Amino acid sequence: MTTPRPLKLAPPAPKPPVRHVHASRATYKSWIYEHCASYAVRWARLDDYDRFVDRWPVLKDWFDAPLRQRLLDKKNCIRGQHPHGGASVIMPYLTYLSLVQGVGLDYPVLLARTFTSPFKHQMRYGGLGIDLALFDRHLTRLEQLGYTCGAAQLTWPLGRMLLHRGDPDLAVLGMDDLVELREAIDRFTARLRLDPLREFYARAPDARPPAEVANGYLHSAIARLHAVHVLLFDIGQVQQPPTGRVNAGTWVDHLAPDFAPPKIRAVLERYLRLHLQANLDRPQTVRHARDALRRLVTWMAQAHPEMSSLADLHREHAEEFLRWLGTQTSQHTGVPLSVSFRRTVVTLITRFVTETAAWGWDDVPARVLFTRADIPKITKPLPRFIPDHELAALMTTVDRLTDPYQRATLIVARWSGARRDEIRRLAIDCLDSYPDGHPRLRIPVGKGYAERMIPLHPQAAAALQPVIELARQQQARPRFDPSAGRAVQHVFLVRGKLLSNAFLFDLSLKAACTAAGLVDAAGKPTITAHRFRHTIGTQLAEGGARIQTIMAVLGHRTPNMSIIYASEERVSRWTSKVWPASRPPQVHV
Image (cartoon, rainbow, N blue to C red; front, side):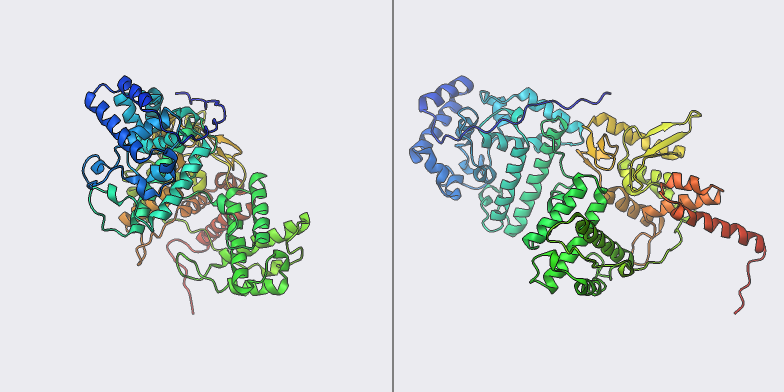
């Protein structure tokens, strides 16, 4: 199959100006008689129209009225009776008013009320101007991308965006519409936490707290909106790809903490966005820098709230920060921050100070705050390879994993020694073979800033091939990979987003280690994905591989890391000569 090229569409059309004017009775009657064959439906629609116009002769008054007055269209509505006790009898007229007459509806009423989908209404009565053939193609495409209930995902957000625009054209929806609906959902959910506006539409009284109901509504709404974003990006109607997480934006949207003073926030935003947009660092490195600088700003807010600029920092403040950092604990585990983590924080802050001073920026320290002596020293542990008996038990349980993506990632990790993020970002053309037929794997640009090609065990190739075929069947639009610097069709892409490391590695390893009995007293797995990498390096050294070979397979930029494996192997060969296998060394105290 060939990958469809994104459509080259014109920029989204601006929304027409809102005109809060009723349609005349004659005009509405003519439309009803043209598109509604049932006499009962015709009479009911006109009767509802007459009642609504009598109550709200000036349509703008209805738009300006409090929301609760606009949710019920007649008195004595009964909860749970179809259609919702008669609470939404006027929505067919409002749908006509929006899609035919161009009177866009506001989001508060569209999010608070329930109503028949305009797509279903179009199928029953017609005349709304919606391209149903295009809608059906959207449903088919969304299911190809991995969604099992495409209709449920599309009708809710698409219907509301069309009714809000007052335009039935699906092809003009763009990024602005997605952002506007998301912002409206956030505002409405905040209101729901205080005022349960939608309680009437529940089939039965809801005993849950309003905040819990609101959170459920928010999760459902943004999941559907995310599906529409995935679809519109895939067909080329919007150019901004959807975020990885459904219930959040992206960390790039929160580069500087909100509580930081304006001057500090401006400098951090400028520095981090420069490194992202100019590709001065990998996104992961920029994220680590953001987290390190956030710790510095947090300490400033606690210890020196009077400081409004980073230029106020001096050496004595740096020493105070170092002492404070040594007392901090992890918010996830509650244990003190590791030496390696504190080393990363100090190193990245030092780099920030050095670079901004060299660039001559304003509102930065412009002086030495930290020296090399301030960077915590770390030990250099030996690679923790997986012993043979543990590796055999683990891979037996990995073979039994039911999810093909989780199974493929762990088997590839076991036989390639690639990093987690490198496996996660594999492209659909990553697998081929040498002239003799042995499989080989192209590993994408990662921490070493270079692609590499390595031989792959046939078992890993067999596990990877089915998920490559699934990716080809989806025919998803290539997404820009910042590390590679180009658009890539990824293997581990489902529903328009890359599967997370937590799903591919953490959850799968937890299940496999638990089944194999490889857990500690607290029930945590004793094997991590990175230990596969150590195992490959150890096995290469034990097999007599040269340092250059270990570097090529593991993607080391310098021999400093690879030499650890070779040094360990030289010690092993020396001791095997000094201590015969039949006589273990005797230790005398």
